[in-house]
Length: 140
Image (cartoon, rainbow, N blue to C red; front, side, top):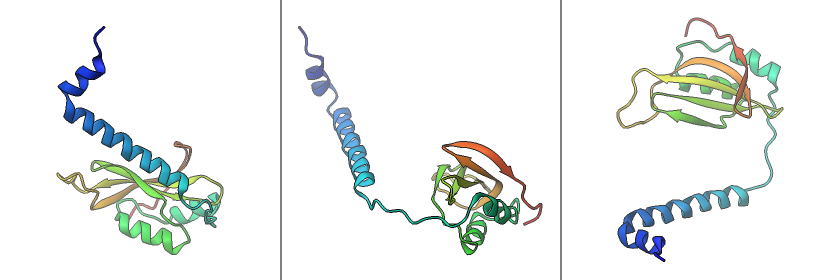
């Protein structure tokens, strides 16, 4: 019987090294997530207040200005996800849902960086499901 794992190790040592490296990195990330502090800081802003605050944001304002405004009003960024073509910034709320901002760059960067983002929309989401859009003002 032919051992395919031996053949793979002889044939593609670089691929095997990358696979092992990737597996180790994922394992370390999981370990870090589990071993981190188990206490969380409660978020003080609830859903109704978040809608009231976010509705004061303007379509076309910079991501930095929108983030600063939200932080001044008690919201803290919970992270971003996306690509250089567009991304979402999230702000966790008191009840476990998040305020999300849809951000698009003026022009996508060739190095895939997230820069010069402009606010397109705001919404509330829970577990990745958008359940409420928030009307924004029309002028930055």
